[in-house]
Image (cartoon, rainbow, N blue to C red):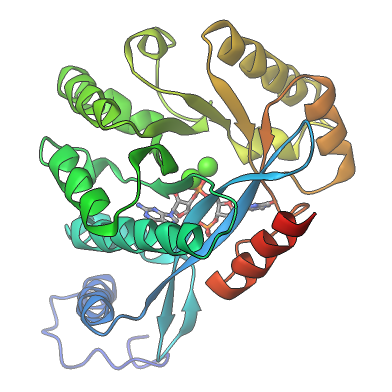
Length: 278
Ligand code: C2E
Ligand code: CA
Ligand code: CA
Ligand code: CA
């Protein structure tokens, strides 16, 4: 079976199975990707449900691999996390997104916050200082930066995470909880953690129309967020039915293919420019 496929693993000692050699290859190419600047950021618009205007963007990483073409993050972020490479990759993401957002502002486009995804490994005591440096270097005001963290980040080491998040908040940026409803969290942390917004996971949004439980969960999360004075964003909105449900139930913001897929800097710039003249 080892002779099959594109790769030849016979360079590796017999005790190394295919999976291990794949991992090694992956590591080597991710390291190279970082050095050779093969990563790109795409941007997906977030819209206000009140008036349909763009009120933010999420930066999403892509890997333009010379061998494999465009690689989606789900195929390499887990490796990068395991190997510790997510820290330098995440630093690149943050720097690039802040610079890009400053460039849009300098070009006179309507200012919007840009959100960056943080992996659990990045959530450590060194993060606030790093973020502060990136903001200073890029000249972007902290209020135009949002960090998306998952529930599991929050639960990993609650005490330390609270302290780190509080330090981050003091910089003046926004923090949202991504994939809300899928993690292993208790609701009590929402009171203790300095977050500004909840993002309803796209699995609930997808099933709004065909599953009463998903619809009920979406409604409950919207109410919960508002009781706690948090904004609420629905991700993965793909059609008018979902859009209408979210609007009727008082969701604040939407994001999804129905309004715009993640796009290149040039395409997002055009989109923002069109907004500006409306
Ligand atoms: P996420 O943060 O939950 O991002 C939302 C994902 O849903 C994105 O996938 C986005 O392209 C996709 N999406 C947006 N609208 C729709 C829709 O209407 N329908 C469906 N089915 N999907 C939609 P993507 O870009 O492949 O990213 C996947 C995950 O990879 C992200 O999930 C995030 O967890 C991770 N990721 C992406 N960029 C970064 C990054 O820079 N750093 C880190 N640490 N993780 C990242
Ligand atoms: Ca996200
Ligand atoms: Ca999400
Ligand atoms: Ca996710």
